[in-house]
Image (tube, rainbow, N blue to C red; front, side, top):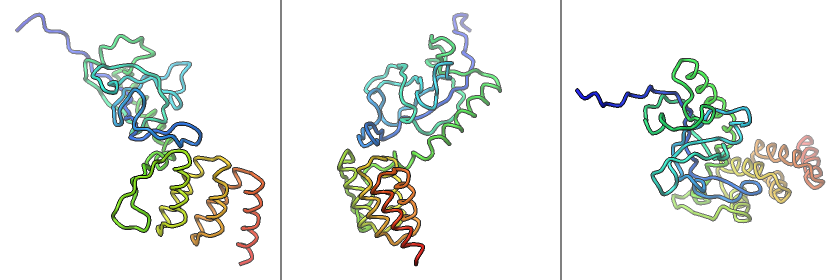
Length: 239
């Protein structure tokens, strides 16, 4: 047996995530791109433990394979662009031997306490971003309006996204799809969505959807929104 064998590195716990298939930027998240500028969609990244000046839920220091290459790079990216948070015991020597300072390292430790720390962060982040899953999951490749098996692929950006959601609210027979469209409008949260929500609140035959529209309109608080909600409530209570 050779005496030149390198010592085996001790496995370490790490917080793992994957880059979202679709990421959103700009006002209301209306500008959609595949993955991020530096990471392809689905790329596995190792998330460094948060330091005193880093809020992991907002910005994450990660190590992963750069888009279009094989080299591992360390980046600070928006945590909202990541999903599938989990704890994992890693054995990859490329990660274990990275020369980052301890507070910037993607490895969190090897003992039971390190495992608990990573699992606690993973669970918290999954819960924190749970409400965003539907927003990030809508890609435009949903079933065509009317419920047949064809697929429409609109460009989900800017006014095109609002137009697509408007068609869903007006024409799709599935109330679950319409409710999802209302939720996306709430995520956009700009005054331009007020007419769509008012029209839906007045015309949709699903009570839950109408209540959800009124809730979002009250949150927006524009004069038109408040007046429409007051009128609808008066009509609803008189029925």
